[in-house]
Image (cartoon, rainbow, N blue to C red):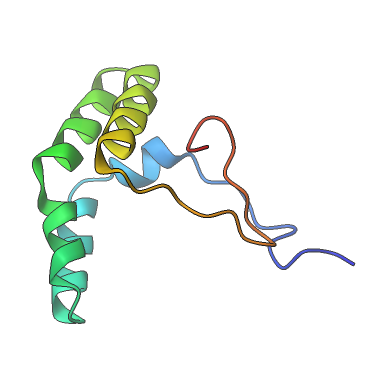
Length: 90
């Protein structure tokens, strides 16, 4: 049986996240739907640092992302159809 995410194209995370205003627009959306805590993260200094690192170098961006995620104490769970790899998480 095929997984629910089979055939979905992988998007370069650096391109997606570093798109002009993406974090700001995401924060605005999260605020509008009642997720102020997550909106604050999208607007936060760690997010700005990760995006700035990606603007410098993709490897620096991944490193900054891993550092920010580690500092947060929150790790994404593996799900039946979605498992985190060595680049983005545990």
